[in-house]
Length: 233
Image 1 (tube, rainbow, N blue to C red):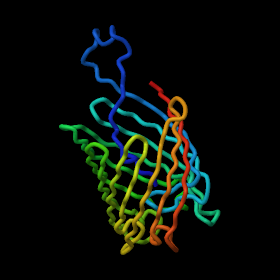
Image 2: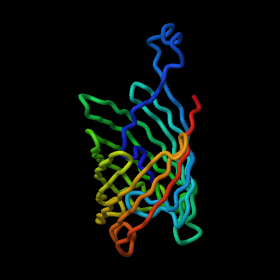
Image 3: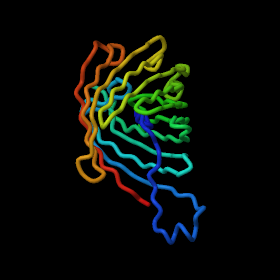
Image 4: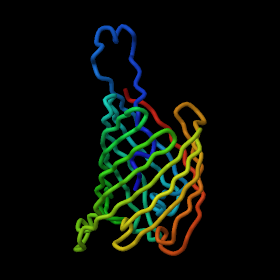
């Protein structure tokens, strides 16, 4: 599952089409609709593997200058068993604002699977706060186990923090019951992201996952991703 916020600011970069348009309609709110496509060498989420190999991804985002946003993101997932192959799609939305240099936001994320073979559904509420290079997030969710079987729904929570500077970033997080009732796990990630061409970004990172996240032992994984974004309006 993808973190819809990527632990970074969702501040808009909407430009006015022309000075004459600004004069004619100075109070018209601006909005932006963008898309993105990419490839991940392997898909991990919160330290837990979501694919056995390369995973393509794509997404569409709508952002309003008022701070509201809505989006859809999807990627290929799959486990060691071929029957586990599936398509994940996430629907998310929320609001973010800045007050005296502090970034504050709240939203929701719905994690779904096209065939329901890889995992069950998850519903989350997401909260985050940031100042300068530091962002802290708290996610509270429900694993909808009942959607794929007789098991009861399970509550979970996740807390994480990110430091980011000049393209370099570090993330540490802890999941409480996220991977199952009574199972806590941690992960740490160090990486670098940079634009290599217009609207094209490449990302390198080293991920350290606890044994609870991988299901067998602590694991260190080198990850590579490339993403191209484009604008619809």
